[in-house]
Structure formats: structure tokens, C-alpha cells
Amino acid sequence: MHMALLPNEKIVTFDRSEFGPSNITLPQGKCIKEDSKSSDCYAHSVEFDPATRAVRPLTILSDTWCSSGAFSIDGTLVQSGGYRLGEKVVRYFKPCMDCDWEEDQNGLLSPRWYASNQVLPDGKIIVVGGRYQFTYEFIPKLSGSDRILYKLPFLKETRYSALVPNNLYPFLHLSTDGNLFVFANDRGILLDYINNKVIRSYPVMPGGISRNYPSTGYSVLLPLKLFSTTDSDNNTSTPDAEVLICGGTAPDSNEKANVGVFVPASKSCGRLIITAASPEWEMEEMPINRVMGDMIMLPTGDVLIINGAAKGTAGWGVARDPVLNPVLYRPDARNSDGSTRFEVLAPSLIPRLYHSTAHLLSDGRVLVGGSNPNINYNFSALYPTELSLEAFYPPYFTKKKPRPSIVAVNPGLKIGYKQKISLEFTLEGSVILSDLFVTMVAPSFTTHSIAMNQRLLVLAFNNEVKKTSSGNYLVEGYAPETAALAPPGYYQLFLVHEAIPSKGKWIQIKQF
Image (tube, rainbow, N blue to C red):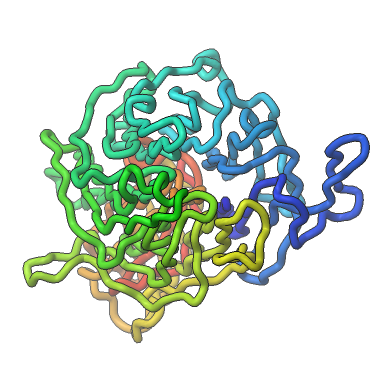
């Protein structure tokens, strides 16, 4: 149900904690006392090593059902909210060998179930919304302003109904000016969260489709392209921020699915430049209807859409026709020949419906797991509980061209804003400068078709490649200028040549 990749290359994944017995038991002595008569000795969270496939049971004390998360500057997973006794809890998981979950039982001011998180330029995390919660707040609680609950009427205005909100897990994207884009149901705003002021309202997305839970669509902030430092006219400019939102379904689809009528999901997508003077939606269509898809930014800047269903909505047993084919979206593709930006890829054999997840790994694969549209573990239902993980190999793995490899990052793996950096890399054959670029990807927290804090920057590098004394290649450029472009914390650094990415190298960026 929930997944995150830590800077130590381990995946932390977890489900609800009151599902009953899981397939993995806790180590002896780690059982959780539920009351005076019973204990829970089953793991509802594990640490998974994709390289060795080793699994380490973890101990969660409170219910994490439909919760949210993001990373702190030091790479700690900060995880918030959940259900019942977990609804005000903030949990912390540090990337170390023997670490386990730590919990602050009163870390939130308001109950947060189906809320969304985003890392901000000062390193704090904003938590927005949740069921019956039309507010936002900040974690962790370090100052007086962090202990204030801020009203956000927009969340109430966009609710379809109390039973079918269609605005839970709102899409959050940090704009390049430091303000927050918030999208719920069929429309978005730009929020000055410091002064609790809506500074911009955007046009309603065309089509009459609801895009948020339970009519679950999916969204990314498209790559932020930083200007080359050799362009003296542009090197102090801020790039535009453009969002992509796809999928979802008709507003009443969940109501109909609950009585056995499964409405086809939407094919529509919309792009909106949220920093434009007069923004307008640019609409296009996917080749496949899809609700509950996962939208993952690949190191190349392309977007992978995977998992989900062609009919129905999110929720228990209310989706039909699993979509087995992933789709690749190329944001920069030109359509003058009448083609689309979409490419249908080879299918999986495993339906991934409600409560499935997907996450980018540092080697360029995408880890896909889960699926449970049933109230409890159920292995005989129409769409059984799925306990497997699988790796999806994007098309760049099939290209018969050499893969670049990053040897070193200078001045090191800790980088300051505006700092000059160089990448030493190896590549069999010659470098094609026009097909070379460097990307920086923020690690996300994925759940319910939303990858919180997902962000990709194309860094500004000089149009020159040098040879080192050891025969390797060297390119030079600059780190992002501001924390509004790249909030402080850990990122995966990739070098892409002829649309093939290197393995990612973890770096940390902050104000030193």
C-alpha cells in the first residue's frame, strides 16, 4: 500500500496494521500488545533490499492505513497520519542498518487520513487535507508557526459529496516560485502557505472528470529544465513549472460501482503551465482508459504510467478490467506527424489494482508491488490479494547502445546551491554532446496512485566534454540555484546519453 526508497537503496514498504496475520512474523520479543489478553506478532512493514531480495521485518505501533509521507533533509522517512489511533501519529524511519520505526503519537494537530505531503524550500513538510479535514499544517513541530492549523476552504469547495469526496489525496507540486500548486477533484490553486493565501485560481480542467480519490487519477510535475550556464541571457531565469494530470473517472462512478455498474475510466490528460501569465489546459488522450494508475518519472524525463483498471474506481471491490499494459509518455515529443506522445509497452501478467504501488530504483528499473481490492487478505476473490513484487524494465534497457556510468561527483556527494559541480563518467565509444544531459530526481513516497514529492530537474551543464588523464569523460555545470527549485535533501543523480541513463548516484543538496 505504501512504498519509499531510502538513500541506502533499501525499500521500506508497509500496509495497514489491523489487517490480521501477515505472511511475515516479527522477531521473538517484538510482539505488540493489543490488550491484556492478545498480542500481534506479525509484521505489517518490512525493509526490502532489491539487490539481494533480503527482507527485514519492521515494527509499526499505529495504523498506517491510507497515510502520507516525505523525506527530511537527512534522508529520514517522515510518515504521517493513518486510521483511528494512527490518524495523528508522525512516524520516523532512518536509513541505517538496524533502525526501526519511531513514533510521535501526537505529531499532528488534526487527524490525517488520505492526506498529501510535500517538502518545502526550508526543509519542512506540509501536510494537506485528509478525510473531513479542510486544513493544512507543517511537520515536524519545531516553531510556533508549526503549531498552527491553517484553514483551506478550497478543499471543502471541491468535495463532490461527503461519502464520495473525489478530492482526497490532493495533488501537490512545489512551484518554482516557492508557492504550492494544489489540485483537487477538477481544479487547482496556487497557495502561499506561509501567509495562508490563495494567490491564484486556475481554470477547471476540461472534460467533467474527477481526478482525485476515489475517482483516482495521477499527476506529475514535468521536468524542470535549468538553463545552460553558457547562456548568459538566461542563466538567472527561473524555468516554467508545468503539471501533467491524467486519468480519473466520472464524478458518480464510485456510486455506480458500489451497485455493480462499472463506468469506463477516462483516457484524458491535461498539461498546465502553472507559471504562465494566462495558463490554459492543453488536453490529449491516452491510448488506454485508466483509473488508479501510478505515474513515475524516469531518469530520462519520460513518464511511466503503470497499474490500474479500465473501469470503476478506487475502493473495495469497485474496479474491473485490470490494465496490464504500461504506457510511456514522452513530454517533449513533437506531434507534427500526427503521432501522439504515448507508447503502449509490453504487459505484465499480474493485475495491480487498489493498494498497489510503483517506485523508481537507482538502477533505472521500476519496482511494482501489491494490490488488494479486498477488505482483508483474500486469495480467492475475483482479484485476489497480491503479495508479490516485480521489476519493470523501461525501454532504455533494450537499446543496443552502451550505458554510461558515473565514476565520481566533484566536489563530493554533499552539494550546495549554485555550486559548481563536475561528473566524471565512463562510456564505451564516443560522446554525442547533443544527446547528453544530467538529471536529478527527488525520492518520492508512493501510495494510492500518488508519488508525493516526486520531482525531476535537468541540470545546467556546459556544452563541453573533457577527457581526464585516466581516459574517462568529464562534464561540468552547476547545482540548482534555489531551494524552491530543489528543496533540500537527498536526490538521485543520473547521467543520460542517447536516452540511456546511468545508474543513479545519491547526492545531498542543502545550504552549507
